Image (cartoon, rainbow, N blue to C red; front, side, top):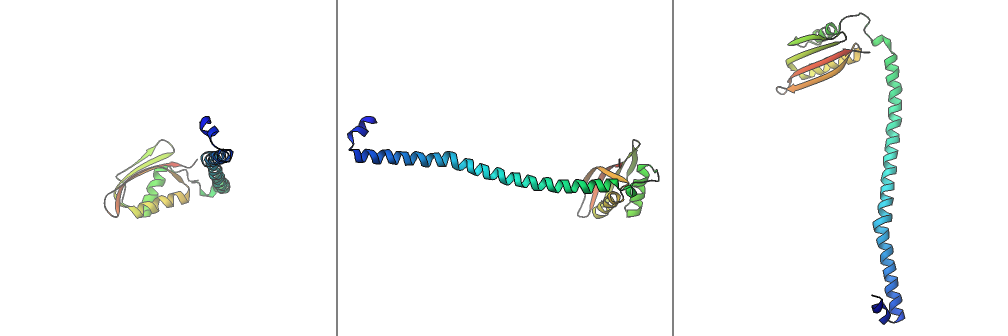
Length: 158
């Protein structure tokens, strides 16, 4: 390669060396600098997104603390959770569950067969709204367009 350059006149040699340096600079930019800048911009955008999410979570955490401190929502009757669940089922208009049983001292479980999905969801929302029980687990299997089989596990709010 150096013999080839030595055979060129100085003007051609300068042009080849200049073109090589420009090509090397362009390759360095395209292979190193630009990907680094793109990665930096993506990380900045992700950091901003995380900061926004953190701010929302901190605001929500305050709201959760306020709601947890609201003792008017907690059941003061001392009823067993399965009795609270039974009362919620009766007031919702759902058919009686195929199985309703206590789960320890602070829990209850129910199994429904062929119940209207929208009534089930309204009942669960009502339970959550009253704050007597929290939903631990729900398993729903579709039967047809409007009805489902469902298993529920609920627990007294701690």
